[in-house]
Amino acid sequence: MATPLEKWVEEQAKLTKPNKIYWCDGSEDEARRLIEIGMKKEKIGDVPIFQELNQKSWPNAYYHRSHPTDVARTEHLTYVCHPDKEIAGPNNNWMHPDEAKEKMRKLSDGCMKGRTMYVLPYMMGHPDSPYAKACIQLTDVSYVAVSMRIMTRMSKKIIEKIGTREDFVKGLHSVGDFDPDKRFIMHFPDEHLVWSIGSGYGGNALLGKKCFSLRIASWLGFQEGWLAEHMVILGIEDPKGNVTYVTVALPSACGKTNLAMLESALPGYKVWTLGDDIAWLNVGPDGRLWAINPEAGLFGVAPGTSMKTNPNMLKTLKAVNFYPTLFTNTGLDTDTNEPWWEGLDGAVPKNLIDWQGKSWDSSSGSKVAHPNSRFTVSINNCPTLSKEFDNPKGVPISAIILGGRRTQLVPLVTESFNWQNGVYLGARTGSETTAAAAHQVGQLRRDPMAMLPFCGYNMGDYFRHWLNIGKKLTQPPKIFSVNWFRVDDEGKFVWPGFGENIRVLKWIVDRVHNRVKAKQTPLGLIPDAQDLETGGLNITKEKMAKLFEINAQEWKQELQDTEKFLNQFGSRTPSEIWQEHKKLAEQLDNNVSEFEDSIHYGDRGGA
Ligand code: GTP
Ligand code: SPV
Ligand code: MN
Image (cartoon, rainbow, N blue to C red; front, side, top):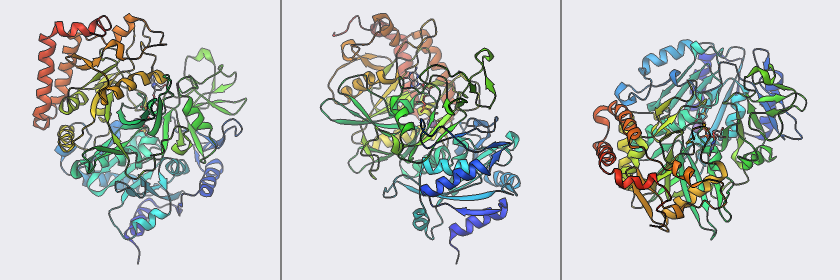
């Protein structure tokens, strides 16, 4: 008798009509065979799926060039198909599940003709974790099969784990003919099903990642009392050897991967990596919040990655442990057969081809690497991997840090007054858009908890859910906001960022353990000047003041924009959120003298 899993695979094959069905076992041998197939047989146009890179300088590394229209997430083609539109909310594109399935059935009919259907059994989370989920993805391209082996815990054992169960997580993926007009990423939350066609790009195609572990998992979390979040998990070790665990939500291409493996600029401090993109958060029996990373790999932005900005990532990429490492849409040095991107160490190579395979010359004014070019590498290669990474229980979280990319307005760091105020802080967070999704870059939009593109249900209900989680926590983490991206009049970043961000993390840890006091502003608490370690930093007092400047007029505009955003959710926006909003608006009106204090940051240090 066929199991529900076997039946499901058979049904999808009947629809998509592949030449062959291949069940993956997740082994290294198999990954080698898939890479071979990708180098010799499978192609996008004339371009082979994989190209071997210089194995001496980049061990186990392979290059992939995507279809030129398929380089980022496509939020406008991404739908969350709850039976009721209100449940999806104004933050999601919606289609009725029946209509969406009909559409997808038509597009998928025969879409795998001439190709192999790969059956990928994988786990999101450690197999022994009570929070982990057993999943199956079907795909018709070796790039996605190999990427999923890097990004998840893929193993044939998952098939046994699923056994005769019907409630496994399902993903049906086909690159189709890459036609952007026939590209859709459809979510059916109640069936734990993601159906994606027309794209081979990360978040559109690696269905365990954003599609399941955020959009669908956030909906499961809403129903079951936990949170699925777009967050880094890291441990901060202080000079005494104590480790404080925190999570950090920053929108796409706003610094999570960099922060997750930060090389500390402060002696005695060390960051331990647990995750760089997704956290599942559960209320433990001890009343603390516990985090696991459902993923097992890193899908990181290449441009800007160097020994100076992120040495631990370069070490990860050059490690020889886990086979293989992939580079997608970077440039190529044709003399050395090495990947190259803007910001990489060393001189610009003489002979480069760009991410589209065209020979590049500095006068062309175009980028060598696509701004959203990426690498895919196992987290097991990471030299700063925490020894708790495989702990099925996860780690207890002492602080939640929420942020965005704001060239103006938002201070370097603030601490919220309490959980409710922190949820409001998250709800009002805005960020300037990046190349991680196909849209205009640099546009300010609200991106609450960095979840705008990933919350699989009505965001008004999501805020309510956050408030409810807070009520269940007897030891709630403190909630902070950060912004590394404020610029000066010349457009240069004021804060040095990267390894220096440890200075802000240190203050946060000090606050968590009540080691320092803080200064009150309408936005929240900010460091007393002497408590933010700036020794050895080449930064003037004026610049530090700039980082904490609060401009009441500009903040009032910001609150208007926030109000417009929150109003979209009607009565679903919790009254507690409006209470906090009113409080902040009043404070900005009345307490100008009080927050004058923060404008003159540093002058009253020690008071
Ligand atoms: P996703 O994978 O899309 O979710 O992105 P992410 O949040 O992990 O962002 P990532 O760490 O890959 O950084 C994105 C870009 O921001 C890169 O080009 C980095 O070099 C840059 N960046 C990261 N941290 C900092 C920082 O502290 N300061 C500045 N100025 N830039 C940073
Ligand atoms: C992001 O865009 O937030 C990413 C890359 O982490 S993707 O997997 O495409 O979502
Ligand atoms: Mn991300």
